[in-house]
Length: 329
Image (cartoon, rainbow, N blue to C red; front, side, top):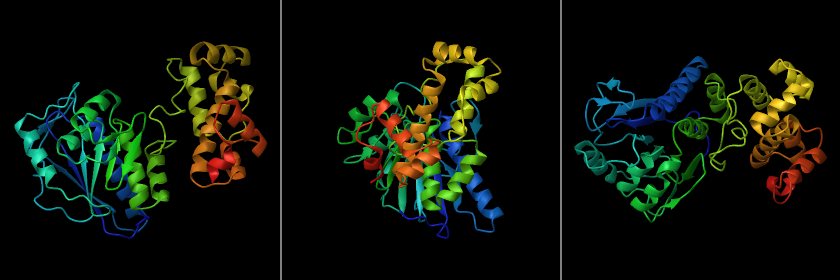
């Protein structure tokens, strides 16, 4: 869908049941709030109107805090409208409660159409959509713990694994928790502009946004299953500025260690050498730039490679199929 910075405000309905996971809705809601704030500061109207609705006027949350004054499920939706379904705790989603049955009945009455009424699911919210029959013949994803459940509830759904989020027509589904923010930033970019989405990401300190084709386990998360604070400082700095002129001495300054000790830390805790880690991150940045339509030369520059040749060397070193030029086409 083309950016619509000056189009009608989108009404975003966060649908909350008892026990809704707070991070699933609070992060995306903050992204929309910040988008409104920035737009108003720049002299434009707010692009989003947020609603918090549910089958009952109050609901507990996953952390026990009670929400009061929820709007009822609307009889009609303004256009454009996004209906946001939220995940629930537990190994399986319980749809046998009175509120869940009420919600499913309401969902079955939706008439989804791109740009008019669209569905956004976060975490296991896609399982609720599946129970309502909204995912038949669609491609969708969910939290990795609910992938099998989603396939069982709606066998006609093409369940995408290891994806941050998936867009299929008027249905947008995410893997859950922090990926809900990734998805909402993507939707802000579509409804408003990539520039506004980037400003929201910067305000939220989301340094590197992920896209619908990125694996759930992003390259920026690889080699970070450790608890060493000095190493995390170095990895954070590289991820935020991969194009900087990094060297082992520069990394060692960030870690406040010697170069030799930094090498030992990387190998012991991250399982990779520091310069090899840097090349992996730069390669991920270059791949994202190529997918966005940049030339090989520009992608290499954005990622911090000194030349096209250096990018191609890293491309083959890490077993990427084809060539960078083919990815840019």
